[in-house]
Amino acid sequence: MSRQQLHRVVCTPRRLRTSRRGARAQFHPALRSLEGEDEGHRCLHDLVLWQFQDGLRTRLVLFECRAYASRLKQSAVYAWRGVVDDVSAVHGPCEGVMVTSTGYQSGAQAVAETYGILILELREPQDADVAGRVMEIRVEITMRSPYFEELTVEAEELHVAAGPRLAWSTDLRLRYADGMEMPLADVLLTGELSAFDAAPTPPHRVERSFDPPATLLDDVMAVARVRRVSAVVGERQGEPSTTTIGVRDRLAWILKETLGGTCVWFTKDGKHHVT
Image 1 (cartoon, rainbow, N blue to C red):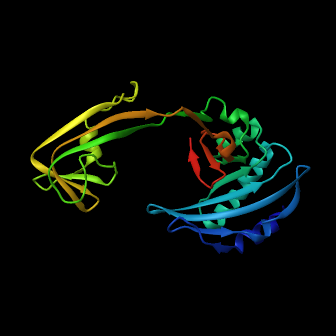
Image 2 (image 1 turned 180 degrees about the horizontal axis):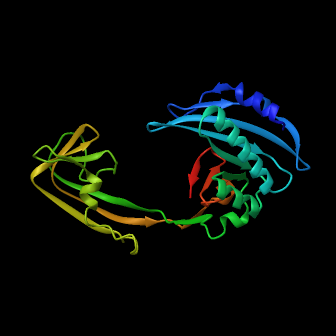
Image 3 (image 1 turned 180 degrees about the vertical axis):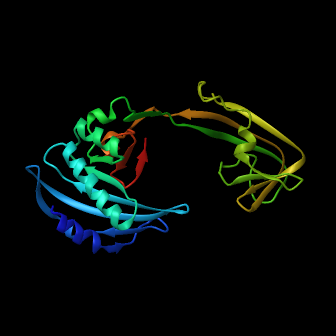
């Protein structure tokens, strides 16, 4: 890339919209897919100048993205520092960022640290990147549900044709004399179920008395005024099942900072996580 090309691109940018409030990105189309020779390696260039407000301060960040055939060398960082200096001379103080997909040499990192150049490595994650991290979660699920049998009511007044035994329904509720309502299941189960780490609750009869009588409702319809309700309650437990949540196969890209070690993980569903 010649200085003439750089000057033409930097000085004749077109604006792009950005998601950050108060930011203006200047994109350089001539470098969008410019092919050239750099130190004997064929590479693609992309140059973006980003201007945004950081509090009361206006900041300029110049990005260059290159797809090298080999790792980034220190000579490339030296050259990029010159580009950043040239842009700074025209547009004001500017920060330089290099993004590479093929890694970097130790000399390149040393030069970047010396001159305040930020190197970002953007690529697919490797096994070494995820070593020591939780990449798989296994969850064992055992379903346990309460049940009711032999529901019996002692009523002083029936509002519908019903015998002393009623068919169980999740719509059954009790309305107390003070107007408070509660699902009949909650009335019968309160204090009757075992802890999760204990064996399922065995079937046993539960009885609840009401003085003054309570109104038994089926949905919105009054069924009876009852003084006593009883039922056989217990718990049924299903066979355990195991669910595996894999993280490794959901990762799409990693953006890694060479100096600080900060990583941004991009997943295939478009989300990102910073570590």
